[in-house]
Image (cartoon, rainbow, N blue to C red; front, side, top):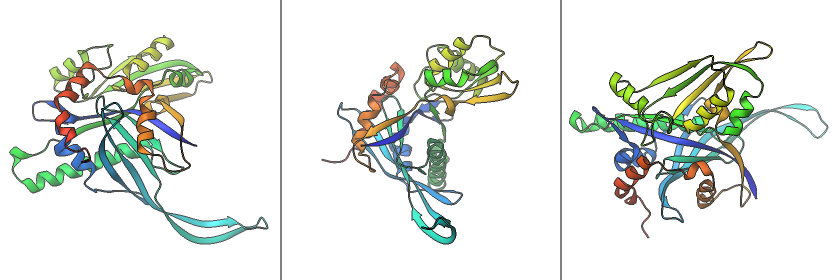
Length: 314
């Protein structure tokens, strides 16, 4: 058995059409899969990031999942070591390396699990940056080649947000003397109800009235810590929470989404390589992965034919 670090997130992708916001699955066959499989790479300092073996699979319950790997190809430099006598010695050695992470996006509700395979594996922030880069490059290249503006593909709003975990929120606020500000940054959603069920369609209506794609709601000097915990927990990855705090010694700090999102260590069979079906099944055991809104279910049913065409032929 091997223990891997796992992130749970909301893979929120909305395509910004001229007059509307279209869900991920509407462009699943024309943008999403072709972009993931395009081979477009992203230079990241001393490493090269790219997607590998991205495909659609059917799980044991007959639901469709988009799976693949994020690979970080790099060269490890060894400049020093300790010899058998305990002395520091100089070295000048280079070793090619390609640590990777595994992802599984459940297309029914676009929740995802992200598994870091080893130390040095690309984190979920790297996955988010690579996704934005690859989608933008793919669409830019396509629109350049097609020439006709009436056939242009729309660009996406991509927000990959960790699902907040109540225990993590409580731990982050445990040593806090007071909260000076709670900011909730919102963005176009892919079939989810705006801000869970707390605000219903209020935020969507406000964005629509103001013709704004993004925005934020700010609460200054909130007094109820338990109320803040409930708000952030119920947001369920549909906003990016930012909590400005002050500690007992008067120092100030900021608690962001990645500090309170759902992370866990999960044991998988084998030593190093994790089988994709194990990632999918372990992910579905996580409670926050299983929730599907009515809007997500309707979108999934409407566009299922665009998913099925990518299933491996038997």
